[in-house]
Amino acid sequence: MRERYATTNGIRLFTVEDGEDSGGPLVLLLHGFPELAYSWRHQLGPLAAAGYHAAAVDLPGYGRSDKPDVAYDIEWVNACLAGMIPELGHDRAVVVGHDWGGLLVWTFARRYPELTAGVIGVNTPDLPRPPMPPVQLMRQVFDPPVYIVQLQDRGVAEWVLSWGRGARDFLELMFRSEVTRRADAFPDEVIDVYVQAFSPVGAFTPPIEYYRNLDRNWELTADLADVRIEVPCLMISAADDPVLSPAMSIGMEERVPNLRRVVIDDCGHWTQQERPAETTAAMLDYLSTVEAW
Image (cartoon, rainbow, N blue to C red; front, side, top):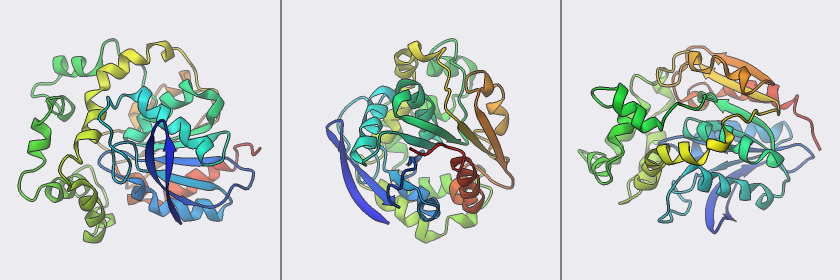
């Protein structure tokens, strides 16, 4: 594996790569919250061994990537990711996203169809456009408020995440809680990698800003509401994910007609880390159907 910085949209993104361009698509791997490019460590080697150029990115504002003082809305983040594809020597990519990365890839495919060879959503389905800005909707529906609403107040969430042992307490809670089916996937040495990335003062703010831009994203993507994704796509769901359940993907075919589905059993929210072999196998089976160029 190789580490490098790629310059795109005026910032540097930290990237871990494996494999070379052999005429197949670039496989661009996007993590969720609170994760890193490291979350795809189990997939990079097998993808490279199968002949693909695979690149996992610390999303803008995460880990070793730059953290500019900007609005981390979906249009700006995806513009950064679009610049990654030529920077890595390709014309198109299969974009793969888990959790927040999953929210990004479905919009990416609609905004940049000329750059998109395929889409793999891991846990995060392509959801229909809600009737009103999502945070406003959540404020009306949930009492007490869900965590996404609680993250909206700047400074408060950052202060809460500094309680106790700070980042370590929060990250152990995230990776070893009820959303995780296989906590043995997160031994101390794995947690340590995430703790190192999120412990510096201010490290949580850019990732939380993704959530604080949800209503802005709703406005920015209004023109994409009726755009169908025509390239081949794969939806990987985890049977035991209480956050993004397989049932949430029902109806995707209306917007993503060329869709394959895989449900991984005995798996919680952190699919590519909890069930790496099964996740990789599903990805490779799908990628074998994507036309090379």
